[in-house]
Amino acid sequence: MFDQLEILRMAGGLAGTAAARQGAIARNVANANTPGYKAVDVPDFAETYSATDGSRLRATRPGHSLPETDAPKAAAAARHRPGTQSPDGNSVSLEAEMVAAAGARQQHDMALAIYRSGIGMLRSALGSGR
Image (tube, rainbow, N blue to C red; front, side, top):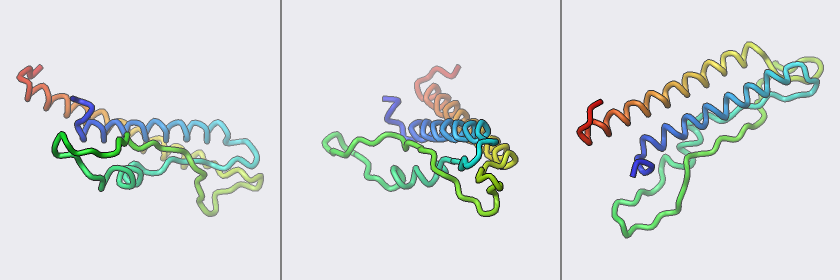
């Protein structure tokens, strides 16, 4: 029952994207001194969500059949930013990675806040307001 609530599925996708982004940032920082390493990043959640779930059909009755789709999966891809490549071919900027890490943390915190709010609404609806 609870896995079918769209807001909780969306929060799960947001948390997954934040985790994937944090992993990409960690790889970038670990390879900051590797010659030829190209920095990677994960697409924004809004882009991946609207591309996979934002406009999909919804089943409004039990007889409707729709393809099963999960929350969007985020995959790291090379990030292209002009002017950030060092002479040895490395494109990692530690300052940019710090900013990206703060953004990933904000995404994760937002997902947790959505979960908390959703659980609070469910508790209120079920009559156990703890």
